[in-house]
Length: 240
Image (cartoon, rainbow, N blue to C red; front, side, top):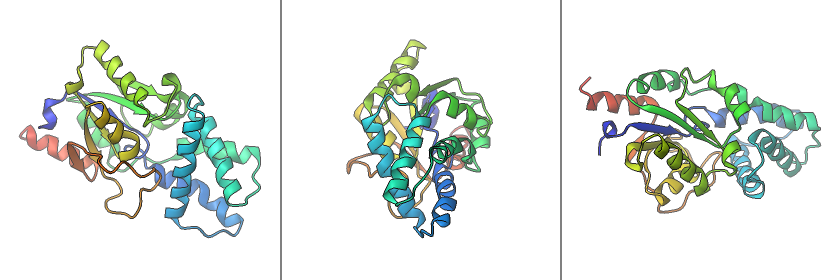
């Protein structure tokens, strides 16, 4: 299998294009320090993953900005912090400050020359608009949890993606799903027979960071440490 066999690259955004783990950590750390709490980055991210997954399962129709505020409320309750409503909403609004990975803009600019680029993200439209200025390209389509009404790893999100692209003339084998999260993205892609490329941003770090552990049999077709590595592989296939 070759990258150049595909016509469409569908991307997860947060964790793959955007360094959401750094964004989440930096948004929560000052609050913890103000209250004299010393928690490791790994523990902070593990707690976020647990509460985010639970909230998404409980309220699949809730838009992500409101869901993040609920997650913050759950986190502060767990940590014994008496937070105000404005602090919950400030955490949700900070999504626009989460940084892009250094290789993201240049990689997307290159890939846009050869592929249709699509976003499939657990986000709402307004939050993605705040993020999009960091990505450097306009995507051909953006499919969010807001219009789908569920959150990955729900199969409905991937069925929505496949149906939308089929209406544009693209079959399942034309699409490569590019994502970091084995839990949110690769496991459901496996279930629907969708090819995938794992962008292994954590590179051997312990645990699963801001995502829940994936099923034991999850698989992928390609594995790269970064988008820059994916681009380098594409260039080699094209003889450049």
